[in-house]
Image: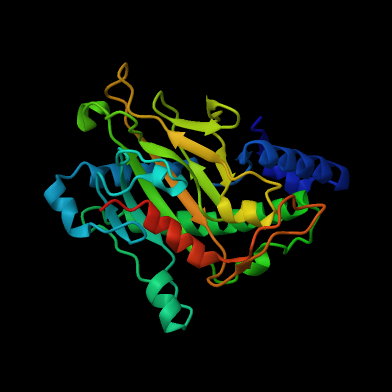
Length: 315
Protein backbone atom coordinates (compact mmCIF):
# COMPACT_ATOMS: atom_id res chain seq x y z
CA UNK A 1 0.00 0.00 0.00
CA UNK A 2 1.23 3.50 -0.86
CA UNK A 3 0.10 5.90 1.88
CA UNK A 4 -0.53 9.64 1.80
CA UNK A 5 1.67 11.44 4.33
CA UNK A 6 0.66 14.96 5.37
CA UNK A 7 3.86 16.86 6.12
CA UNK A 8 1.89 19.47 8.08
CA UNK A 9 0.99 16.78 10.61
CA UNK A 10 4.62 15.63 10.68
CA UNK A 11 5.85 19.16 11.41
CA UNK A 12 3.23 19.97 14.05
CA UNK A 13 2.67 16.58 15.63
CA UNK A 14 3.68 15.50 19.08
CA UNK A 15 5.91 12.51 19.78
CA UNK A 16 3.07 9.98 19.45
CA UNK A 17 1.84 11.37 16.13
CA UNK A 18 5.35 11.59 14.72
CA UNK A 19 6.14 8.01 15.72
CA UNK A 20 2.98 6.82 13.98
CA UNK A 21 3.85 8.70 10.78
CA UNK A 22 7.43 7.42 10.86
CA UNK A 23 6.21 3.84 11.28
CA UNK A 24 3.81 4.26 8.34
CA UNK A 25 6.66 5.54 6.16
CA UNK A 26 8.86 2.62 7.18
CA UNK A 27 6.16 0.10 6.21
CA UNK A 28 5.52 1.79 2.87
CA UNK A 29 9.18 1.89 1.89
CA UNK A 30 9.60 -1.76 2.81
CA UNK A 31 6.72 -2.79 0.55
CA UNK A 32 6.77 -0.49 -2.49
CA UNK A 33 9.39 2.22 -2.06
CA UNK A 34 6.79 4.94 -2.71
CA UNK A 35 4.87 7.61 -0.76
CA UNK A 36 2.47 10.39 -1.61
CA UNK A 37 3.12 13.59 0.35
CA UNK A 38 0.72 16.47 0.90
CA UNK A 39 1.28 19.60 2.96
CA UNK A 40 4.46 20.22 0.95
CA UNK A 41 3.75 23.90 0.33
CA UNK A 42 4.64 23.89 -3.38
CA UNK A 43 2.28 26.29 -5.16
CA UNK A 44 0.20 24.51 -7.84
CA UNK A 45 0.34 27.68 -9.95
CA UNK A 46 4.13 27.35 -10.07
CA UNK A 47 3.86 23.80 -11.36
CA UNK A 48 1.26 24.85 -13.92
CA UNK A 49 3.46 27.71 -15.08
CA UNK A 50 6.44 25.40 -15.63
CA UNK A 51 4.32 22.99 -17.66
CA UNK A 52 2.89 25.78 -19.78
CA UNK A 53 6.33 27.20 -20.60
CA UNK A 54 7.87 23.78 -21.22
CA UNK A 55 5.08 22.80 -23.60
CA UNK A 56 5.87 25.83 -25.72
CA UNK A 57 9.41 24.54 -26.07
CA UNK A 58 8.45 20.94 -26.81
CA UNK A 59 5.95 22.15 -29.46
CA UNK A 60 8.77 23.74 -31.46
CA UNK A 61 9.91 22.01 -34.66
CA UNK A 62 12.80 19.60 -34.20
CA UNK A 63 15.26 21.86 -36.02
CA UNK A 64 14.66 24.54 -33.36
CA UNK A 65 15.29 22.06 -30.53
CA UNK A 66 18.27 20.30 -32.07
CA UNK A 67 20.88 22.94 -31.06
CA UNK A 68 20.09 22.11 -27.42
CA UNK A 69 20.50 18.33 -27.85
CA UNK A 70 22.56 16.54 -25.17
CA UNK A 71 23.21 13.01 -23.97
CA UNK A 72 21.84 11.56 -20.74
CA UNK A 73 23.33 13.43 -17.80
CA UNK A 74 23.77 16.63 -19.80
CA UNK A 75 21.97 19.94 -19.49
CA UNK A 76 19.56 20.58 -22.33
CA UNK A 77 17.18 18.68 -24.61
CA UNK A 78 16.96 14.89 -24.70
CA UNK A 79 15.12 14.16 -27.91
CA UNK A 80 13.17 11.07 -28.97
CA UNK A 81 15.24 7.92 -28.72
CA UNK A 82 17.87 9.36 -26.38
CA UNK A 83 17.40 6.89 -23.54
CA UNK A 84 15.95 3.53 -22.60
CA UNK A 85 15.50 3.28 -18.83
CA UNK A 86 14.88 -0.48 -18.86
CA UNK A 87 18.57 -1.07 -19.55
CA UNK A 88 19.42 0.15 -16.03
CA UNK A 89 17.93 -3.07 -14.66
CA UNK A 90 19.06 -5.24 -17.57
CA UNK A 91 15.70 -5.20 -19.39
CA UNK A 92 16.27 -4.51 -23.10
CA UNK A 93 13.52 -2.24 -24.45
CA UNK A 94 13.16 0.06 -27.42
CA UNK A 95 13.95 3.72 -26.61
CA UNK A 96 11.52 5.49 -24.29
CA UNK A 97 8.68 7.46 -25.91
CA UNK A 98 9.43 10.84 -24.41
CA UNK A 99 11.36 14.05 -24.71
CA UNK A 100 13.01 15.81 -21.78
CA UNK A 101 14.61 19.07 -20.84
CA UNK A 102 17.26 18.28 -18.23
CA UNK A 103 18.74 20.54 -15.57
CA UNK A 104 21.34 19.58 -12.98
CA UNK A 105 23.45 20.95 -10.14
CA UNK A 106 25.64 23.86 -11.22
CA UNK A 107 27.05 25.66 -8.15
CA UNK A 108 30.79 24.83 -8.19
CA UNK A 109 32.51 23.13 -5.28
CA UNK A 110 35.97 24.49 -6.15
CA UNK A 111 37.28 21.03 -7.02
CA UNK A 112 37.97 21.24 -10.79
CA UNK A 113 37.55 17.52 -11.45
CA UNK A 114 34.29 17.24 -9.50
CA UNK A 115 32.91 20.44 -11.00
CA UNK A 116 33.75 19.38 -14.56
CA UNK A 117 31.69 16.22 -14.15
CA UNK A 118 28.85 17.18 -11.82
CA UNK A 119 28.52 20.98 -11.49
CA UNK A 120 28.37 22.52 -14.96
CA UNK A 121 26.23 25.54 -15.90
CA UNK A 122 22.66 24.90 -16.94
CA UNK A 123 21.34 25.79 -20.37
CA UNK A 124 18.09 27.73 -20.84
CA UNK A 125 16.04 27.80 -24.04
CA UNK A 126 15.95 31.34 -25.40
CA UNK A 127 12.61 30.58 -27.06
CA UNK A 128 10.86 30.41 -23.65
CA UNK A 129 12.71 32.93 -21.42
CA UNK A 130 10.03 32.76 -18.71
CA UNK A 131 11.07 29.17 -17.89
CA UNK A 132 14.21 30.24 -16.03
CA UNK A 133 12.56 32.13 -13.15
CA UNK A 134 9.87 29.47 -12.74
CA UNK A 135 12.32 26.56 -12.63
CA UNK A 136 14.74 28.41 -10.35
CA UNK A 137 11.98 28.96 -7.80
CA UNK A 138 10.84 25.36 -8.07
CA UNK A 139 14.35 24.01 -7.59
CA UNK A 140 14.76 25.96 -4.37
CA UNK A 141 11.55 24.45 -3.05
CA UNK A 142 12.58 20.95 -4.10
CA UNK A 143 15.92 21.19 -2.30
CA UNK A 144 14.25 22.21 0.97
CA UNK A 145 11.50 19.61 0.60
CA UNK A 146 13.96 16.83 -0.16
CA UNK A 147 16.00 17.58 2.95
CA UNK A 148 12.78 17.54 4.97
CA UNK A 149 11.89 14.15 3.48
CA UNK A 150 15.36 12.84 4.35
CA UNK A 151 14.78 13.93 7.93
CA UNK A 152 11.50 12.01 7.94
CA UNK A 153 13.27 8.94 6.53
CA UNK A 154 15.92 9.16 9.24
CA UNK A 155 13.16 9.17 11.88
CA UNK A 156 11.51 6.18 10.19
CA UNK A 157 14.75 4.25 10.80
CA UNK A 158 15.04 5.46 14.38
CA UNK A 159 18.23 7.34 13.56
CA UNK A 160 19.42 10.89 14.22
CA UNK A 161 17.78 13.66 12.20
CA UNK A 162 20.98 14.30 10.25
CA UNK A 163 21.52 10.63 9.33
CA UNK A 164 21.23 11.46 5.62
CA UNK A 165 21.33 15.26 5.48
CA UNK A 166 24.88 15.33 6.82
CA UNK A 167 25.71 14.09 3.32
CA UNK A 168 23.78 16.85 1.49
CA UNK A 169 25.95 19.88 2.21
CA UNK A 170 26.78 20.30 -1.49
CA UNK A 171 24.73 17.63 -3.23
CA UNK A 172 24.14 16.89 -6.86
CA UNK A 173 20.62 16.79 -8.23
CA UNK A 174 18.87 16.38 -11.55
CA UNK A 175 15.61 17.88 -12.70
CA UNK A 176 13.81 16.61 -15.78
CA UNK A 177 10.80 18.08 -17.50
CA UNK A 178 9.51 14.90 -19.13
CA UNK A 179 7.07 15.34 -21.99
CA UNK A 180 5.14 12.24 -23.04
CA UNK A 181 3.72 12.97 -26.50
CA UNK A 182 0.40 11.63 -27.72
CA UNK A 183 0.15 8.52 -29.88
CA UNK A 184 -0.86 10.88 -32.67
CA UNK A 185 2.74 12.17 -32.45
CA UNK A 186 4.70 9.01 -31.60
CA UNK A 187 2.84 6.56 -33.79
CA UNK A 188 2.24 2.96 -32.79
CA UNK A 189 4.58 1.87 -29.97
CA UNK A 190 6.95 -0.93 -30.80
CA UNK A 191 6.61 -4.21 -28.84
CA UNK A 192 7.90 -3.65 -25.31
CA UNK A 193 8.13 0.13 -25.74
CA UNK A 194 7.03 2.48 -22.97
CA UNK A 195 6.95 6.17 -22.26
CA UNK A 196 9.55 5.13 -19.68
CA UNK A 197 10.64 1.52 -19.45
CA UNK A 198 10.64 -0.48 -16.19
CA UNK A 199 13.41 0.58 -13.83
CA UNK A 200 14.33 1.73 -10.37
CA UNK A 201 15.77 5.19 -9.79
CA UNK A 202 19.45 5.27 -9.06
CA UNK A 203 20.03 7.59 -6.11
CA UNK A 204 18.53 8.63 -2.80
CA UNK A 205 15.08 10.22 -3.20
CA UNK A 206 12.97 11.32 -6.17
CA UNK A 207 10.20 13.91 -5.89
CA UNK A 208 7.71 13.69 -8.74
CA UNK A 209 4.91 16.03 -9.79
CA UNK A 210 2.89 14.06 -12.31
CA UNK A 211 -0.34 14.13 -14.24
CA UNK A 212 -2.95 11.41 -14.20
CA UNK A 213 -3.63 9.55 -17.44
CA UNK A 214 -4.32 6.19 -19.03
CA UNK A 215 -0.70 6.04 -20.14
CA UNK A 216 0.62 6.99 -16.71
CA UNK A 217 2.75 5.72 -13.85
CA UNK A 218 2.67 2.13 -12.68
CA UNK A 219 4.42 0.72 -9.61
CA UNK A 220 5.59 -2.86 -9.12
CA UNK A 221 5.14 -4.68 -5.83
CA UNK A 222 4.25 -8.30 -6.56
CA UNK A 223 2.58 -7.16 -9.80
CA UNK A 224 2.22 -4.00 -11.86
CA UNK A 225 -0.47 -1.61 -10.61
CA UNK A 226 -1.49 1.93 -11.46
CA UNK A 227 0.08 4.30 -8.94
CA UNK A 228 -2.46 6.07 -6.72
CA UNK A 229 -3.02 9.68 -7.68
CA UNK A 230 -3.92 12.74 -5.62
CA UNK A 231 -3.76 16.09 -7.45
CA UNK A 232 -2.67 17.81 -4.22
CA UNK A 233 0.16 15.35 -3.58
CA UNK A 234 3.70 14.90 -4.80
CA UNK A 235 4.97 11.37 -5.35
CA UNK A 236 8.16 10.40 -3.50
CA UNK A 237 10.16 7.26 -4.11
CA UNK A 238 13.54 6.01 -2.99
CA UNK A 239 16.28 4.82 -5.31
CA UNK A 240 19.00 2.21 -5.36
CA UNK A 241 21.51 4.06 -3.19
CA UNK A 242 18.95 4.60 -0.43
CA UNK A 243 17.98 0.93 -0.58
CA UNK A 244 21.66 -0.03 -0.26
CA UNK A 245 22.09 2.47 2.59
CA UNK A 246 19.29 0.77 4.52
CA UNK A 247 20.70 -2.68 3.88
CA UNK A 248 17.69 -3.52 1.71
CA UNK A 249 15.28 -2.83 4.54
CA UNK A 250 13.65 -0.48 2.06
CA UNK A 251 12.82 -1.26 -1.50
CA UNK A 252 14.03 0.81 -4.42
CA UNK A 253 10.71 1.65 -6.06
CA UNK A 254 10.38 -0.17 -9.38
CA UNK A 255 8.15 1.66 -11.83
CA UNK A 256 7.35 2.41 -15.46
CA UNK A 257 5.24 4.83 -17.48
CA UNK A 258 2.81 3.13 -19.85
CA UNK A 259 2.89 3.79 -23.59
CA UNK A 260 0.47 6.31 -25.08
CA UNK A 261 -2.92 4.57 -25.04
CA UNK A 262 -4.66 3.43 -28.21
CA UNK A 263 -8.07 4.44 -26.83
CA UNK A 264 -6.87 7.97 -25.99
CA UNK A 265 -4.56 8.80 -28.90
CA UNK A 266 -4.50 12.53 -28.08
CA UNK A 267 -3.37 12.04 -24.46
CA UNK A 268 -0.09 13.80 -23.71
CA UNK A 269 1.33 14.20 -20.22
CA UNK A 270 4.16 16.06 -18.54
CA UNK A 271 6.05 15.18 -15.37
CA UNK A 272 8.37 17.32 -13.26
CA UNK A 273 10.97 14.94 -11.83
CA UNK A 274 13.52 16.01 -9.21
CA UNK A 275 16.30 13.53 -8.38
CA UNK A 276 18.01 14.48 -5.13
CA UNK A 277 21.39 12.97 -4.42
CA UNK A 278 24.14 13.24 -1.83
CA UNK A 279 27.51 14.96 -1.98
CA UNK A 280 29.95 13.63 -4.59
CA UNK A 281 32.22 10.99 -3.14
CA UNK A 282 29.82 9.97 -0.38
CA UNK A 283 30.57 6.45 0.82
CA UNK A 284 27.25 4.60 0.91
CA UNK A 285 27.55 1.80 3.42
CA UNK A 286 24.69 -0.41 4.60
CA UNK A 287 23.30 0.33 8.03
CA UNK A 288 23.93 -2.61 10.37
CA UNK A 289 21.30 -4.94 11.81
CA UNK A 290 18.70 -4.71 13.17
CA UNK A 291 17.92 -1.87 10.73
CA UNK A 292 19.72 -3.37 7.73
CA UNK A 293 18.84 -6.79 6.33
CA UNK A 294 21.71 -7.22 3.81
CA UNK A 295 25.30 -6.04 4.11
CA UNK A 296 26.22 -4.59 0.71
CA UNK A 297 29.76 -3.70 -0.24
CA UNK A 298 30.25 0.07 0.23
CA UNK A 299 30.08 2.12 -2.97
CA UNK A 300 31.08 5.61 -4.00
CA UNK A 301 27.73 7.31 -4.61
CA UNK A 302 28.69 9.08 -7.80
CA UNK A 303 30.68 6.26 -9.36
CA UNK A 304 27.47 4.28 -8.97
CA UNK A 305 25.30 7.06 -10.42
CA UNK A 306 27.55 7.59 -13.43
CA UNK A 307 27.46 3.89 -14.31
CA UNK A 308 23.66 3.90 -14.22
CA UNK A 309 23.38 7.04 -16.36
CA UNK A 310 25.69 5.48 -18.91
CA UNK A 311 23.61 2.29 -18.91
CA UNK A 312 20.41 4.00 -20.07
CA UNK A 313 22.06 6.10 -22.79
CA UNK A 314 21.09 5.02 -26.31
CA UNK A 315 23.76 5.27 -28.99
